[in-house]
Length: 159
Image 1 (cartoon, helix red, strand yellow):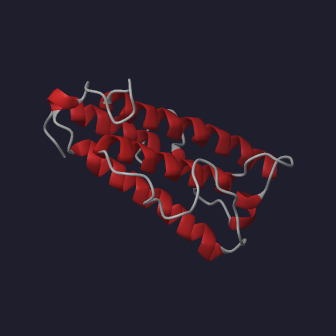
Image 2 (tube, one colour):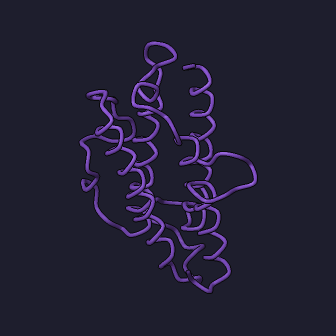
């Protein structure tokens, strides 16, 4: 872990929003603990997103944030498309596990990129016009917690 206090704080923020112990209750990864493929595929109503789609959506936006931090070009996300992906293609434990692993990979890739940001560049714009690297990293944490809350609600409704 970096000794830079600003980066340490950003990493703490994205980690507690994603998979580390936090005071507020379940973070994104915690909200997915124990969710079965059938629960993940359940929809509250036609046209509404399910838990599975929220997982892949979060993975995509971690990828998009990584791209904006690193200046990488579009097109390297493992799935075709952007933002929202119709899920599941097939309700299977393997497919669910693969999409959870995709979320974990995208988080680790993004986290590694954030850890490499020099302190003096935190408040410089990312590749997204008008958004600093610091704002991008904190926005990822907020995005994770937003969808963790939605998943918690969907889990209660599916029972």
